Each structure stands twice: as C-alpha cells, then as structure tokens.
Length: 377
Image 1: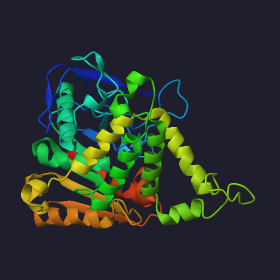
Image 2 (image 1 turned 90 degrees about the vertical axis):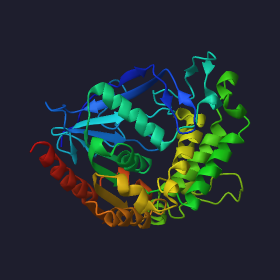
Image 3 (image 1 turned 120 degrees about the vertical axis):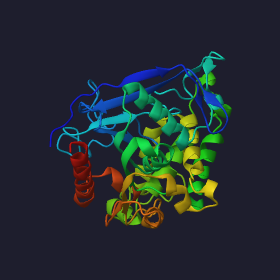
C-alpha cells in the first residue's frame, strides 16, 4: 500500500466567536487541519477523522524535513488502506485548546496581550464538534460520508450524530465509550493533580516564568500510559526484566525495564505537550455524557441519531472496555438504528486502535467499502 508522502498543514482563521457550553466564548481563533485525497464533484466523499488526547490534525502522511513525522493513524489512512484516499477526501482537524497549532492556552489572548494560560476557556466534546462543523462550512462541505475516531475521537464521532444528524451518513466509533467510568475520571484527576501540584505550574501561567511543569507532565503521562496497555502486553514486553545485571537495593534508582520505559515515555511527552492542554482535554473527556440530559437514559439520548454505525472494541482494553461499546450498541439497537459491531481479540489494550491488527483493519476496510459504494452510487 502506498504512502501519502509529504502533506502540508493548513489553517483557517475565525473572527466570529464560538459559543461554548460553559457560557464563555472563544473569539478570534484559528483551526489547523490537513486533508488527504480529492473531494469529488458533488462533495459527497468527505470523511472527518477526530483525534484523541495527545494527537492532532496530522493523521496521515509525513511532514517534509522532519524525521519520524508519520501521522498518528498512517497505517489506517492512505492509498489502498482501510480509509482509502483514492476514494475518500479525508480531513483531520486540530481541536481548539490543543497545543499543535489551533488556538490554545499557549497562544496570545488578544484581550490581555499575554498567553491565555489558565484563562483559556474550558472546552467540551460538543464545542469541538461545533468548531469542526464551522471549518467544514468554510470548506463548502455540507454533508460528511462519515465521521471516524478512536477513544476521545470516537466520542466526537458519536457527538456528531447527535449535534448534526443531517450532516453525516456514518459514524465509526472505535475503542470508545458513551461516557467515562468513575475509575477513568479518577485516573484523569490523579494525572491533573500531578501537573497542578508541580511547583513550576504557577497556577497555569508558567509561560510568564519561563518554565515548564515537566515533573507533573512526566507523571501524568506515566499514569496514562499504564492505562493504555494491557497486563498481557506489559508482561510480554517487559516482564520482571531488570535494567542491570544485579539489584541495586535502592528505593530511588531504576531497577526494572518497565520503570525505564515509563520514564522514557514521560520524558518524551514533557518535551512537546502543554500542561494546560492536558488539563483541558482530560476534563473534556470527563464531561462527555450525552445521556446526562436524559436522566442517564442512553437510548433516549441517541434517539436523534440518524447515521449508520460501526462500533469496534478490543478484548484487553480495560480503560474503554468492550462492555462500554456494547452499551452503545444496545442503545442504538433499541432505537432501531443500523449498527455493525466488531469485538477484536487483541492483546494490546487500549492502544490496539492505533495498531495494524489484520482483523481490525479488515473490519474497518469492509465497512468503508460499503460507504464508498453509497457515495459513488
């Protein structure tokens, strides 16, 4: 299968304020995005791909002049791949509040002339979907063939079916859930506290102090990374392997390979991710709950949806377990919506949605083949 090769990010500026669920508004903001493939004559083959926590608009292809710049879902998207750019026009959008180009806490607040920092308004999944819809308006795309995402991206795909039911044909909700469990919210809170209690955080205004709360970011990433992997995959990769030949008998030195790996992941993350963005995005995860306005009745919440669905889960994903996907499937069936469900027996935990599992990719490919036939019928 061919690679997309080098791709170039684009940006659109929006002067009109974006009203947010919190009651605040985001004005004078920019969205960064990438597109792959060609929009057909009747503009009916567009697929929106929504990103998860630490990802961005750079979904596929590579960036010129940068080593290891492959898009985060490059194995899924491109010529001849499951989401085939020979047939679909694919759009990846960086959500507001992120640290990868779209307006976020690191950018200047026009009102104060200083970086937003902790003053950046709280954003929700629903706010992101509204921002994405505005971008599509600018691109002249009235209706999407599909919206697709994994994890937090899957929540956005689900929200699209409720906020803009007339503007899309299909939703691909992968390794996701209709809301976070109490355990998931707890993990997010521990990660946030690691950041907030870092002395270099300075209440979110660390930019003015010329520092970065790297200690907090490292711990937050280590916590998150543990939850993305399964016990089996960690055992297979690391087991109880020692870093050195002999035990150091130290409470502070790195003894096990798994410790070394987690510290490496934490160090890497702290070099490129923004602390305020981490707080914003994990809170958006916590808040997402379309059933809340319906007394917790998910079926009632999904009554507005008109799209057809593909829901995919992975057996060893304990953070977004198959049980949560089945809840979604049942609520859709209760509404007599068309839904296909694939539960993939994979050992990789939550990260499985990013990996090239043949059964998983075959399920997505088969579903999108059907979507392509509808588009070009």
